[in-house]
Image (tube, rainbow over all chains, first blue to last red; front, top):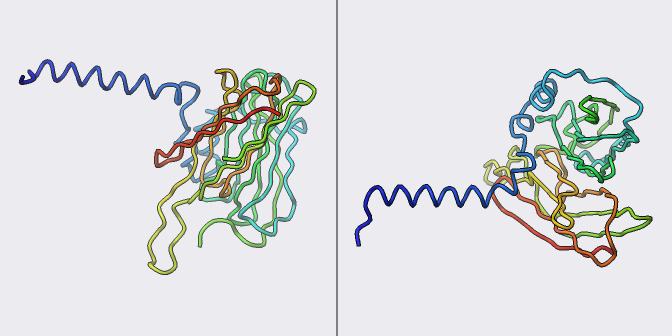
Length: 152
Length: 100
């Protein structure tokens, strides 16, 4: 039975709708922030991720990262805070080719803290930014690197 | 993905070690002189009882075989956590982990 043009188009619509429904659970929470991750300057990354909101430096943001890293390929970093209503925690490495390293979304009921390992291409300032109650708080620390983690 | 989840004082601590090369796309194969294409995890989620309890978005600056630790309130011994990552090439890995 030949398929009419109209029928074919209908099938396409149904097909793509089904695909979209299947994909939504992944992207419903928050789509991967590609523009912010691809930004090459830290200020651009801030702008695409947070808009023009001001970032206040705060000691309430506890950033734990070594002062000297022998291997820039795996630098342990952990961020935590006692602040309430934390929405997200982001980590930036100022002098990396793409400064935005990771963003953690903290749903209600999850402890505001995370640890991971990051790459540092060279000695750089590492900044953690916490979004809590719609406001932004940051804490920075310099990490000296003896062997870089990016490139050959 | 290796996952360890432990509940203590009504807080579940989760540690994840994902096996992944995390290629930045800037590295060059020394023999052929060609660039190694980027391949890195973009999102890692942890679900408990159908609710997302943690979502991480990664860029290329996260170390290879990414390590991640976080904790959430609640969680019952013997319950299952669903972890999942997807990378920029569309590859997906899922692991279920029991809370101990």
